[in-house]
Picture (cartoon, one colour):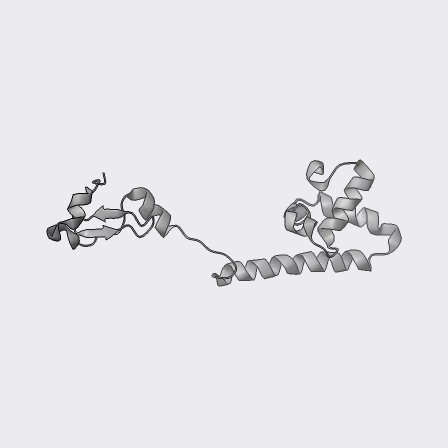
Length: 136
């Protein structure tokens, strides 16, 4: 339990060096020991929670690169397919459970340039009358 500080305590010189601020929420806290850094368990856990993205993690960056390589490769394969087998190829691609993460990706569906997710979405709308997310 965190002790609530009285404003008069802030002026008392004996407590000035004992008053610290929580590293997470920046609230003042009175430390019972010199190593106290957080006002409570919630702030300590939140501060130590891992925040990784492609900019700060090599593994996440590699995963993201591999993901977009898969997206671009699938679009290349689609474009190389003869016109008469494209619909069958798209249906197989959409029905493959490992590609759901690609064809339902909102960022790919909103992208300006054509990609495999947009092609799959247009195919499903044309053939079944529902969006790609409604298809799944």
